Image (tube, rainbow, N blue to C red; front, side, top):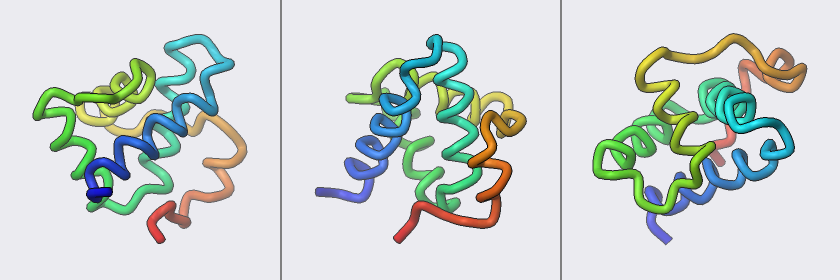
Length: 91
């Protein structure tokens, strides 16, 4: 699995885990999570993937990346992102 494929998979998993919310809320929460927990290199990978067409991104994940690209990080969407602002998903 390539690093780009892994970033797409992770963005989709986050969006799907939050999908109980309405679509706009799920996208904002996914954007918040990516902004807070992803290493800058991972964020750049997903931005580059979107610029190349964003193949395989589920709608909430695609919208989350668009939010980050166009507007920057949204305000915190959950207690988890308030608590974990100094942590990363990168391992």
